[in-house]
Amino acid sequence: MTRHIRCCPKDSRYSLSFVCPVCGGSTVIAHPPRFSPQDRYGKYRREVKRNEGYNY
Image 1 (cartoon, one colour):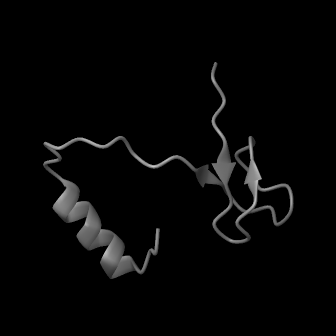
Image 2 (image 1 turned 45 degrees about the vertical axis):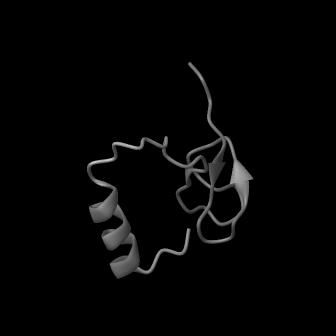
């Protein structure tokens, strides 16, 4: 089983666990998705991020 570095969106701390050791919130995978020039859904993904206010 491979372990991926994860990031807590609340306090921007990195961890290997699914729960942030500092605030107790859930963590997300810190790596960006793979790039593909033939990205069929990139337009929709960017629109959702823009509507939800994500800045990363």
